[in-house]
Image 1 (cartoon, rainbow, N blue to C red):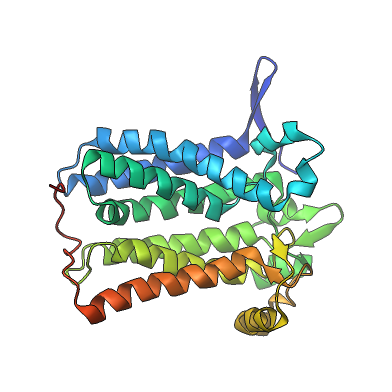
Image 2: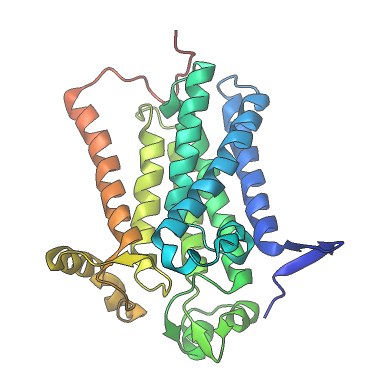
Length: 297
């Protein structure tokens, strides 16, 4: 097992989890700054956006996770603040970051959706790298698998196989699945970003569609998925949508209450993002193209 502590500054341990998330945020920022130059946006604009958005994302991610796992924290409030031990939810991070970004862009006089288009590749870059923090912590993994599945079927390098051996059992490297899916999404976003047919907000919606599609299937094999008891018809629908993953050899969906929160959110976000694009196109709403950006008057 890798040591989750990278080094210590006196009595204070510095965890790889935080370092990796920080690296992901930094590389995402550099990509966003480079994209912003195409539209004459100064890098200070994005520095300030990160200074507001990053802590808002962390707070949102932690609040979201703790809210759904309150029984685990209510008797030990101090652990609520120990995010280096893991326990943050990506959808909570997105909610926090979007709220902060809406406030900031409006204060600066820029249209939020157009700035969100510029930031979309940076967002997915941060997620792609940040998942490796879960790898170091041996968390957010999937259900049990065999060593042969990891080594021979997936052909993973030995350092990943060894790290996925947790308390006498090998597990699905769901961090890797999501990271590779995000890498593919990043490539697609970089290809689409300069297409002249895109309208303001559509690249950002494309990010939501791609990420939510992958997250839906990855969530089905995770053992730590937040869940709740819901109507059986909805559980059956989600299970039916997830069945292609079982067909491809991922096994059965992991146990828990019948509705997995992130799976349901993934479906709702994907549908909402697709509807956003389709409805605006059908109505022929006067929306600027992604290649145009200017301050709102």
